Image (tube, rainbow, N blue to C red; front, side, top):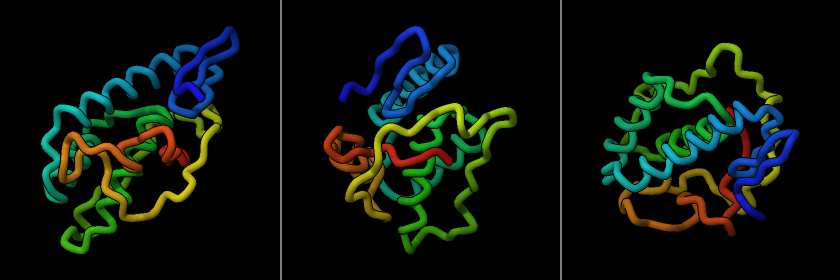
Amino acid sequence: MMSESSGKKGAVVDGFYFPDNPEAEQAKKEKEGIRFIREKSAMDGPEAVLKLYNRMIQQNLFETAVGYTYLKDLQEYLLSVPEISREDILPIRRRPGLRQDKAVLLLHRPGGHRGEEPAGAGDPGRKGKAAGNKSAGKVYGAA
């Protein structure tokens, strides 16, 4: 299945159907931003991932299910690391006005396990389940 498609009634981005084209365009921008973060950020350990994650939360960087899914993946990874205190992990805040029913989940996360490292954690070039390869079905829900 292609990760992006569009039509007159909306678009699919990263497994989510967006009925509104402006929101679909925002989701595409977020997908590109996530790709940039994975390629350029130094996530060489849990502390670096925590710092980046908390900075993205504080900046309200994402507003679609695509971005929230990425944040949730990072959050679950951080929660699985014993050296990271739960109190240090900021909660994901939903932006006012975001409707959870705006994006419809098309993919599930088969075989996904809590504690998988997110893309870039430990190895910025790593490819695997948490890096979002298509066979892993990385999308599993919006926060």
